[in-house]
Image (cartoon, rainbow, N blue to C red; front, side):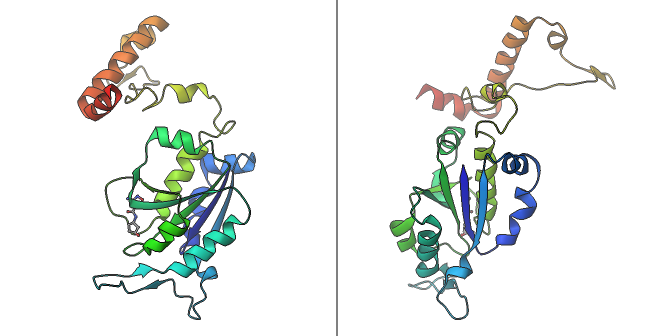
Length: 227
Ligand code: 4FV
């Protein structure tokens, strides 16, 4: 899997992408990540990448030329899926992450200011994705979210694929509660069934817990499963 990230804040990424799972995935050559500075692609002599919005209104809009040319240059002749991170995009779900993890090449475009000129979207963007119904300052953090949740599904990155089957959203439900030592923490005990060694009873308890939790905190997931 190869990621190319187009941003006006390239320095934001190294601290996050060179730690933990994503760092190991790069060391194991399971993923390659390249970060590109959008300003390197502007023809503006002052390296400008934004301008005032036509029709007036607050803030600035990212201009067409740097974005379209940057995407064209980074794409080269490769078969790449170009994603824009934007609050107007399709909500990111684990199902969507699993689909994206099957791609060989992804370009992640990070917006800023009020957004990007719509002609970039029609000209060069395959899909817009939102990480949630709230407004961030830029698409950089959403791009990091995508790199993390996709990289951990790349075969050979996480130790046991098994652990992926039981995690949240896999069965369209929240995950069951987890416990580890000590069995008694200042009088707060671990549920006995987990100490019983009876794997059938444990599996049954975990399913019940996952369902109760989903009913309580994410009833929307249960509705979605019925659809
Ligand atoms: C966002 C989101 C997001 C909006 C204006 C960048 C900012 C600025 N991206 N999911 N929520 N982006 O808030 O993906 O352009």
